[in-house]
Amino acid sequence: MPSIPDAGLAMFFLLAQALFAAVEDGSVELSDAEAVEGLTRFVYRGLTGRDY
Image (cartoon, rainbow, N blue to C red; front, side, top):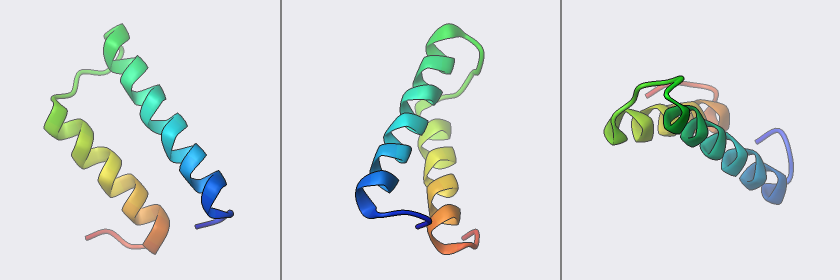
């Protein structure tokens, strides 16, 4: 992670909150499964530098 654990957790929370807001506003259309998959892959890639 590019920062201390607390900052990394805060960044992930803000990312999840922003995605939720975009879905609620209708800016983005995602199913629950698509949202979980997208967030998981984004964070995993950020932590490891690779995709799975």
